[in-house]
Length: 465
Image (cartoon, rainbow, N blue to C red; front, side):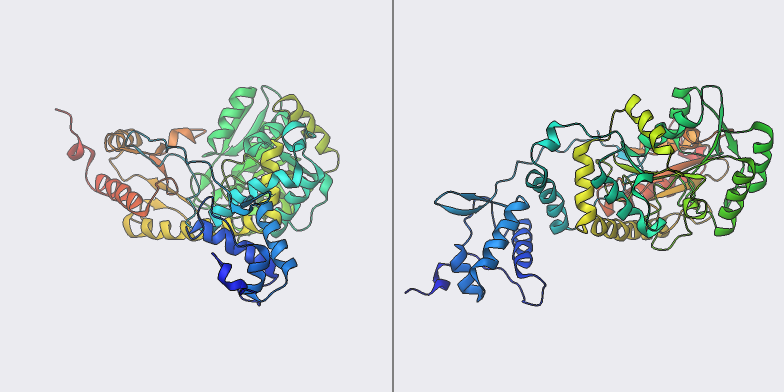
């Protein structure tokens, strides 16, 4: 009989200490496809031949091939064997007309080919997990129990164990905010927020006819005394805040100030809407307001900034067992439901550890970009945090936000002026997104342009003749 080793066209590099061998073999297939050692349409070795070459039993290899098929990596052809599955050709990248768009506050792209391949593989594997029902059936407005359980798991590091009935799956953070705001306030009524706040809240309030009142801020965030005065004067229906890595100022509220804000809200009976879009980014952060006052806070844990903007999934934690009915009614009346497909992708990534791996890569790349920003932007004008992928640039006199914006547009750079965030008089400041430039050189060139501009007077940089 011929040696089985002579039939081997590919052999994975694995160690028996790597955990379950069938998983290690499937992981090796994924890695070798990503790195080009296995090409589309290539035939894998027969299962018995590979088992003989590796010195393991046939059943293990069979399980490994089934796992790879489950991930969408390979396909079986009757009577022919197992082949690397062909992937769809990449669509051409959209161009931005030469503009480096630093106006969007995006997480940086991850730079791990094997992890990127696994993201797509997991999406392909949903077919065998859920079948056609995932694509052809509606789900409950608040999400399935399975998807709510994934939300509980994702939020556990920040909020501990949560009852399933208090978690609602929403169509992104904006969908969650729409459900909350429309349930707590009517047209003409008031919600208060930081004086510099999230533009999505401003758009939502304008759409619903809700008044927004700004709370004065200092270098540590909203001022408790200003919040107390506003509660006495206005009787707001809710407080909206973004206490960790605030958008746009990057401020994180201290634990003392969190306790002060919660105490005032409780004293005046004001529910809190906590937008924790960036809360997963720091490894260590003060506890969310929802952990300090779970009976008072509507907590929004979106996935856009810490996992994927494309998913449009957020987990809403409500303060009591009656609130989910209100939230589901609001969801049913507006967006109908969160996308079951997106929710299923998110759940799979959370359950198999992929979400944690992506978060770790976002943190790593964010740290690298923050290092570049620290080298190039003067600390007396740039306000940021090592865990944030945006910078709040407070302009030196005599620069104005309008003049800088115009100069940057002419130089091919797009940023956001403070007008988009201000509930009162806008400060002379702009927000710079560090995550959008594709490469470190692109980021470095853009920040150097900004630094060179604000280092001279607006008149000296003018091209008007």
